[in-house]
Length: 336
Image 1 (tube, rainbow, N blue to C red):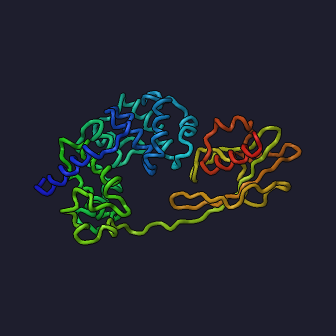
Image 2 (image 1 turned 45 degrees about the vertical axis):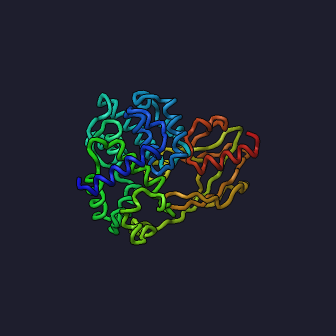
């Protein structure tokens, strides 16, 4: 490391000692607790993810306990966080770890776990095991792009390589855990995406973006996939205190979760519209859902894959957030 790199790292570490976030998974070196927090916080804000982490740790305090859980139990606990593949990967990885006799203590070993990419492997490895591996996430991209005045798109092949190499060069090997957390917190709290307070920034005096007036334009990101709109029509079938649900198949959104009758064409005669054009936003998709209630006089034949479930038992099934909101709204309105 040259002197500029040393000053950069030391300034961040000094800042972190005074301003770092107090988080429960930072009060331990338990790889399980740290890994669990990293998986939950993928695509999730800390204030939303923290209660989930606490509930998971309370119910499954060890990786062995989590590995023994069923997929339905884990999906139900995950309900509301979205990106449900994370929950399935979480369970698979927990079983991998148990099969290995414990968490691997190398970057490559951590990287081999289901759902663990370079960032998560670096975070868990550095925080739990002091591995000298730099983390690179959105916060890191932003801090490095602004400080060093880098306009290479962060989501290009060249950009990913450039920022990963730079982050590793800046890492003080003997303080990897504190430095990685400092850099993440600095991006989240100080060098924020919008309107950062550069006047209070300890790096302002040597920040290229601050000097050149390019804070608002860095980092650069190439435009990606256009958001598409998808319409869905659900019918809540109610017959003798039961309702018809199915587990969603593989190869589409919400795989493994449960949903009421999904209608592609006309709704059944006598069905009553409860909600129309309920908007639900996913990463690259906007869902617009209509929701009907149908109370047939005789038991209807259910399409393949659907089964009758007692309404009071719905609480035991993992539902997509959209379906959970719609169903709970209906049940509460009808005092069920």
